[in-house]
Image (cartoon, rainbow, N blue to C red; front, top):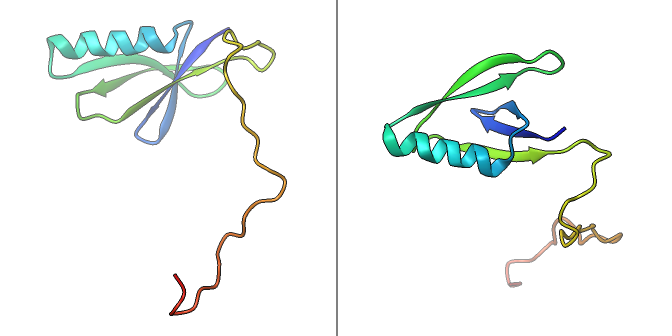
Length: 99
């Protein structure tokens, strides 16, 4: 099952069975007609509780697609990056004359 995660005000909400493009289009359409809109989402783990988020053009909202761990990527061209085994030191001691 695919679900979309919405990050709003530091909290995480979900929308079941909708992809990022659909949620994004719904928000864009709602804001085209009014200065704000209410976005229906679910809150909580396990048994989700319905919630409404007030969204305006100045509202920071992140929309992320979340898939089940056993689901394969639909786009095989998506690259995966791994950190190298040897990381650079976190800081270097530089003297006043060093640059």
